[in-house]
Length: 78
Image (cartoon, rainbow, N blue to C red; front, side):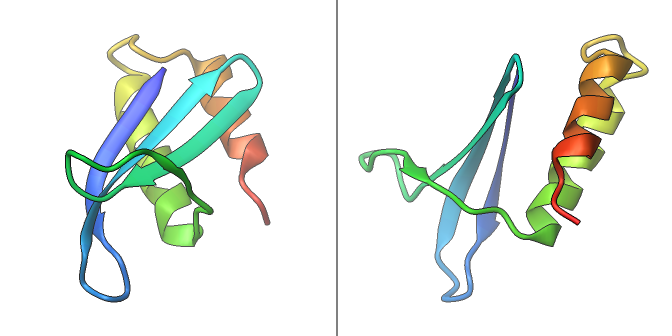
């Protein structure tokens, strides 16, 4: 499953965040603009909150299972 959204960094630059969930792996990447490559990304609490809210919206529509949602919750650093 893939999640994505746009956000601004501390310098005010807009970038795209992509989160790939495949099996037991969660990969966070980001890129600036269309012609740049995807770079690894270290998420903060706001990013984790956004991912959890996006996943939570998909569970009732059966686009994402409850088991997968619980896996995301378990991977969030405390």
